[in-house]
Length: 200
Image (cartoon, rainbow, N blue to C red):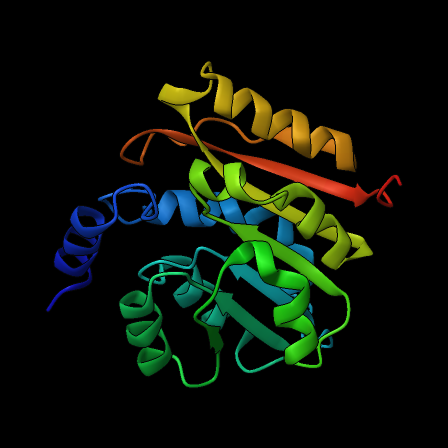
């Protein structure tokens, strides 16, 4: 069964947990990875990169190709069917069927310390149920980068505003990419750097 059909089926089964019925476009994947280009293009680097909400694996495919076996690539996906398919397609990627909110425990279980990048396609429901900005900031090295896709038609809605506010509260540098019109729906990428320590 094609990824498109599986994604649609899983969306129908759990629409609040599957972010979209369409896979990310090549243009959106490129926009997500652009902030990581210096890291991914350095043949001497062996970065640790984490994906949250890997889905059908469009970002996974691109990251695996760019890393070409270097470093460590961890993909976290809550949906067990999508995680199973992803693991079968990418034996070199550590695919974890789990909740992104449990990232600290998941990384400890993999004996992974701080990471160089966290790339997220998580839906709002994940942000509502767990402090994703805190989790990402805590996982990152001081020079690490966090990216999160935001859908253009929903940027004015309260959940999107809360999402951006949460990221700005935990990172010293936050920017939005240009609009990726070649995606359905159009989207932007929230790019965050300089993770701040959690306040007591």
